[in-house]
Image 1 (cartoon, rainbow, N blue to C red):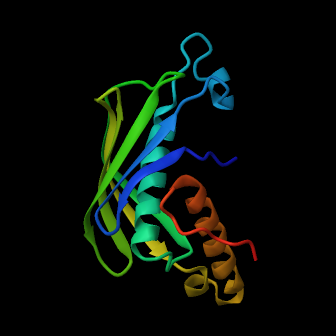
Image 2: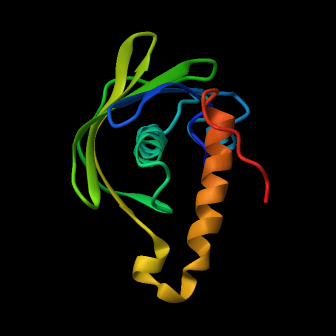
Length: 163
């Protein structure tokens, strides 16, 4: 099961920072179990939201040069609040450093101006063909699909035609 934990990208400065939002709906399937009488967004999904926003920043900063952006590490992750149905998690991520294959970012998620989650993330980026040459065709397909999703999330993104 895949969760899309970004509703909208509000601002993106290539090579620098991103601001995105996720408004928690009571209709989220996982809230039935987490927790029935006190529904809140699970901490691991808050962290996933930080990762997803950070990955969009990395992709757009490099003009979608890589089909894969994965989280290698989450360090100093701190949870300081809850996200309840109807509340909006505002996610901000800033690039701290970048080399040929990895990007380090500081990311926070706030609810009503109060930090609910923060973490230092290490993301790795690569193309599928670099690890599986027999699957080279997947890179172009994946990048096209990612660009289409990005265009739905970010009003300033270039429109992508279906091919």
